[in-house]
Image (cartoon, rainbow, N blue to C red; front, side, top):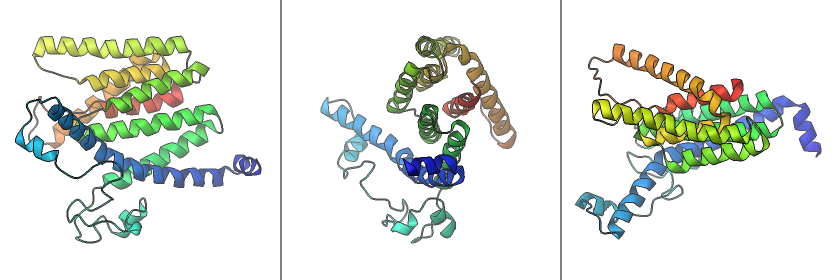
Length: 282
């Protein structure tokens, strides 16, 4: 209890502890972002083989590889395959110390690693300082963490795993049992309205253009945001997300020499940014 009282009265030390802890969590998020989509792919191919689906030879070969999960194989360089040493895995510091290159083969390291770590730490500390020591802080941090994972996985693979979007949805309903953000009835209606709205829009787009314009993962993500903030905030959340996507699309159009209207831009990052804004100003 004395430690808890000390942390409550000394927010600087509390924030420092939260920042360091969030950096470590962000380092683990990098593992999830890189490996979880591959784990889903391998699980899908295994299911195809188990049910004697028509899998290609390359797919069959991928099933014969070593076990692959969030722990195994240990962290290694994707270029030279050498196992990283402990001081290569220190969040942010290792990237700066190695100057953004592998400590063995000097191949460039993606800047995604420090970006995810710093973003996780900053958002976590900001939510902690904004809400203080209360249940809404725990809810907000979990909300931000899942959205970070969804955002970067969607950017890399155009995939929104159900395990993440549905976890976000159920967490929203769970916290709103206690009216943390909105009442439970508004949250439930938000789930239904969020999913159905994008579902109808996507079907209309397909009917007009005869091609898919949005994945079902976006439906579930908006439904999850509805579970957190209720149905009344959905129009504003969508408006902010659409405006952000338009701005990015215009920037891409102006900076790319070759731009096609068929170019795919992930929508989950814009929904996530909009959702993070509404956690403070819903």
